[in-house]
Image 1: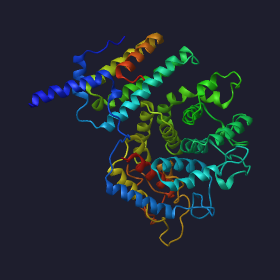
Image 2: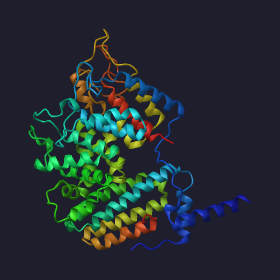
Image 3: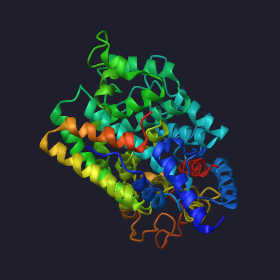
Image 4: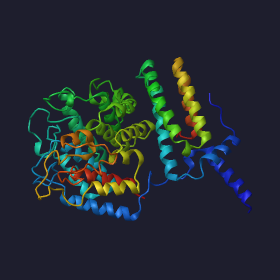
Length: 118
Length: 367
């Protein structure tokens, strides 16, 4: 599971990720990240889907997320990018092992961390 | 206060904001992905006025795809998309396009290719392309009553959107059902509740839409990679535009748009969707979209293939082949081909396609 980041860590993230990027870029990206997490969580929580279908969808989506995170690394900041990639890699490993419960918990933890939950 | 102290305080404040929630950051009123200066905005508005003056129309005032005769073969698609883009841009003239979509539906709920074709039973009287226009209209106008009538007719017709078709164009695919799901949510339907309702048959459009919810979005990057350049790739991007306008936002949509744009970099519409507005894009739009109706050197009206019906769905190489020229430059849309025949470089727009692009530009550049 993802550990709650320390204040020192957040200081670093704040330093790296915020100055120099427009509110528009951050807002657009934030909307997208919320959408990504909602989609992943929705798939992992959808009782109408079989486990194999959920795994298939996640396997198809994860490379897209990884590519987009890397592409937006300047807006995100290098620390947040590294953390996001780590979450995605770990989720991919969960899916490969068939452990969808852990994958869902991981996505929820990341969502909480990013403050995207309402 | 020393610079060092200011730095420390600023850093601490940033950290606190981050710690509590990204949502606590002030939201800008409008998301902008690029910037256009006020002069460019004015130039675009003027050009849109000029386009409204020459874009061909039928006698009843609704759009025609060609200047030589009233053609509405794909009108419902174009009308619906311009209805949505124009509504988002705040242009009241877009209502003409919205009204044309309304008039393309007959009282039984069925939708047709255009207002002049409504009620005329022929093979291929509708298609999934036209469906995009109807769904775009729904997002713009929230016409739930018309949607209900359409759903009832489609269900009574075995979930097909026309009676006779030359191929599967009237079938609603899994990807299309997923788009329905997004549009239904934007219309205020509780699709999950409908899905759970045991009184609604499992093959009803409401439940089919829910079935396609995830498969449709997962498939988008692959479709953007594999759809042939031309109308098929353009349809992928139009579906994404409708999804975004209905409130969907995620990396999958963005990735698909970037893929489409990278495969046809000369397509101004794809570039706008993928990268947002820019001064460079405005310049190229003004080049591609002429102030006056393009004509032959002797003043006569252009005909297909010199006259094209919707620039953003052009298979560039195929069109060039039809005209006996070679298309190889990445700026082909705005600086096309050596025009040995005297064709002006923008002879392939129909006017409405340019109104659509400018509506998009103005909407996305809003403060």
